[in-house]
Image (cartoon, rainbow, N blue to C red; front, top):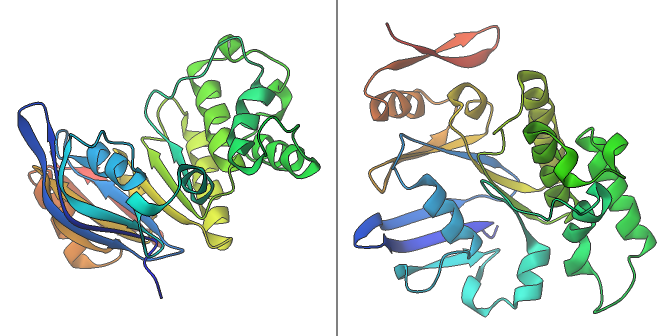
Length: 258
């Protein structure tokens, strides 16, 4: 089975500092991987590199493969169909209607200057309903709160209907009930065979993933199943033993040590 994403010998420099130190990583298809680690570990940089969003000058060495193909040989339009991206602080014009913002996710599937198809409309409606943003579809993006805006941008990413979905801090500005809604949406994506990779600061939520990529100082120190003791000990170690992971009511939780 081809890997959904593969990184080989990835070394990245931002300014005069190396932030990724020759990383190797393989993401199996149809699984949810969470990238965790302390601030400055290189989590977001790794995610951007896997998405092909880093300027070439920053990627000093290494290769990224999507679904068995080198990223460099995949045409940009095909990239936009295969992988969906939700980054930190995503921008969109405040004057745009919510419906139109989410429809932007369908652009890779449309012919040049063609009107949206019935399928495009159906995908946008489904994405807005999944994120509970349907009632705002006629409102301008600038009229929404930070949490509402984040749900609209998530809907835009969902509307792409890509095989791979990468999300950098997708829970930003979401209150706890909508964080749970996000978790349910991820499980729906997994049920459809989508590969999901997310950077999360919320370790308790990250423990719901299938696998965890644990980073520290530009290195991957562990990659394994969230339920494995070795993974949990690695997470505790990179946070200087200031958190502890325990089972509770059939799931894993992270609690601060005092």
